[in-house]
Image 1 (cartoon, rainbow, N blue to C red):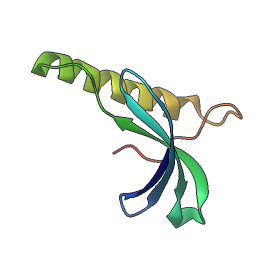
Image 2 (cartoon, helix red, strand yellow):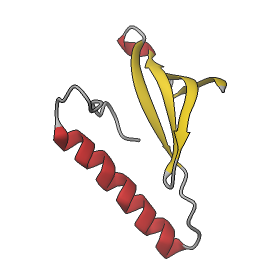
Image 3 (cartoon, rainbow, N blue to C red):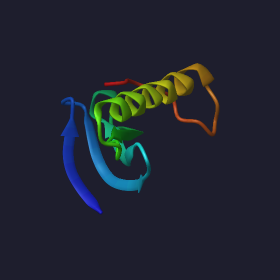
Image 4 (cartoon, rainbow, N blue to C red):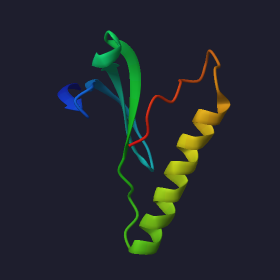
Length: 83
């Protein structure tokens, strides 16, 4: 699926990689870093109700922090930004 969208005036989405319980994952480039390849994970929870949404939001944040804490590893992408 080809996509033409720029997020935060920086990240150009290229294509949808996959979808899961938290949302969608896209291949992208960082236009402020010389078109460096990156991955964008869009938060689109499938749960309804405020308690379920709050829990899904917390789990998504925990996933971002775990990725950041893993540091540099050749098989794990670097966390550039969380928004």
